[in-house]
Image (cartoon, rainbow, N blue to C red; front, top):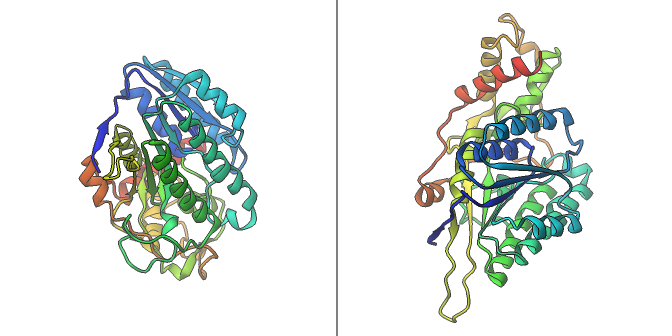
Length: 355
């Protein structure tokens, strides 16, 4: 499908889920790149993980806003609050919407299903309804590599069937894609879903393995390596994710009519993943080496004594592997940052942040 160029400068852009991990980095990128316009951040600052990390990211956003010609407005609220979303759209009329707000995590969804329904389904529905009732040029939203479930075929392609989710989280993300497609078809709303593959980096989510493993090692605790280390993940560094989102924002699916004279849905989905899945044991070894190099852990740390190989977790999958060719073909970009560089930057950040 062709793309319609979307100019970011001079526009009002809504980023939900900021100051979450991806959201905060995206807002900072927009504040540094745009020369005019308004960026609105929305987040409920919930306690899924330590809120002080979100407050830290919000401070980074506010500092970036001081140096930017672009206006920044932060709204503390929940996308599941329909009145709030309707009021926000009516007041600010965002032209571009990036919906990153969601309850994340595969394992958390097993014990806390209600929050996933509220945020990922009801909240996303509220965003779609607001886009329907306002002149939105492009809706970009976060999907997840989790939608591929236990697919045996690798690498995962956006053309693969994704009808067998193995977690509620994955089911809600697939539902987002279906809802977006129907709204694109019915109301001609240009929408692009992005399937993120294991995003990591400085100031990331503490529930992600690399971060939680670091905290356990620092505390002298044992880290569990699942499926006895026989896992591969397509780890994607945060800067690569942001570059991909930033480019996608500027190219909306083209509005065209089909042979019946009715609009074809201006809808697309892309993978954003490194395209080089790493063995989990290699990833852990690299993390340990970088933690030593950054003086987070001493050189004589007994890593073997703090590892435990265990079985697979419910809802997890053995391999994730992105085919990002479509993203490269349509936007001229594919992730390039390797785990040595990425984990090194995380370790250096962690050393300073945890002082």
